[in-house]
Length: 115
Image (cartoon, rainbow, N blue to C red; front, side):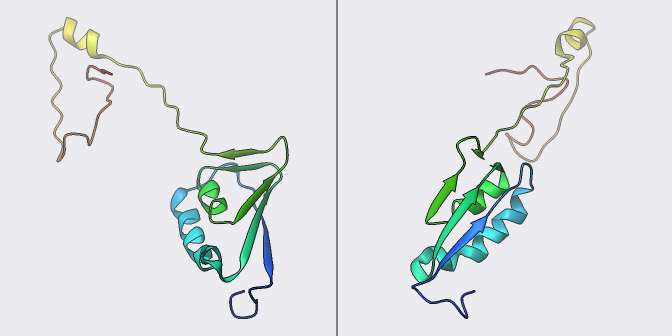
């Protein structure tokens, strides 16, 4: 596109991805960076969903146009795991965890979870 388009042109990118891997869309977003730097205007249209990684790609555009019912942005992460800390403590069982950094593992099945 950069080889044939002029500064008078505008690109319209239709984007839809309900789930994605961030690294792939991060790479795609970086490839679109020259457009964002004022060489060519770019508009992203979202009719349904642009979540997680595709949201990173959409943010490169000069303008995002979305349908009134579209979902766009980070949808967050949710995890539910059992925690056996009280059971282990009651039975005097210790779990040892070794990491190479203080925050490498903040939540576990066996540790006491705090704020």
